Image (spheres, rainbow, N blue to C red):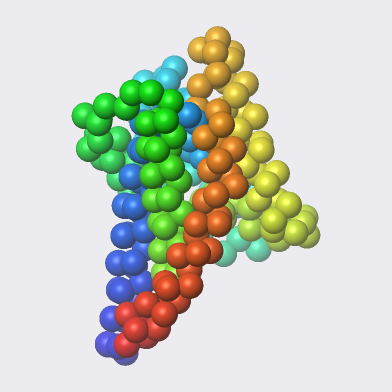
Length: 217
């Protein structure tokens, strides 16, 4: 029993490390100013015209997604998925902390912005790999995609693309409506949509070897 608890603790530790890495990835994407990843575009835009910080807007969005999962799945909703709530609270808090931590970094010039954006994409991809390897809970965004797949029988890849596009469209509309300009959605958003998954897949290979040593020991 102690061995099982120890392994579970290690998995949650790995998840927490992944959340920290992802939070800094979001912060660097924001700092780059070339657009955030699709999942972060809506919270970022909300933070620009409401009193909410990026982190609190992220928490609010995740709570909304959790409620939508419950409405979609109803009796088929698994209560274990409510773990997404404390994870959302932690991730939102970490995101605000990461934004604060790198606020002193100055970014000048388009090339420098792309460099910072690339760092953000890399960190988010690595963080996602840590989360997947931990295997204890999915974030609310992925949970929402899985809920739609389960409720309507749609394939995951197409549903994920549809979900990302929906978030980007909502973020764009709100940005134009309240800010009268496009914020949070730019070429960096497209790059993140394409590259984050590729980075995660590359990192997954060594992470699988690491997990056999660290998580199953």
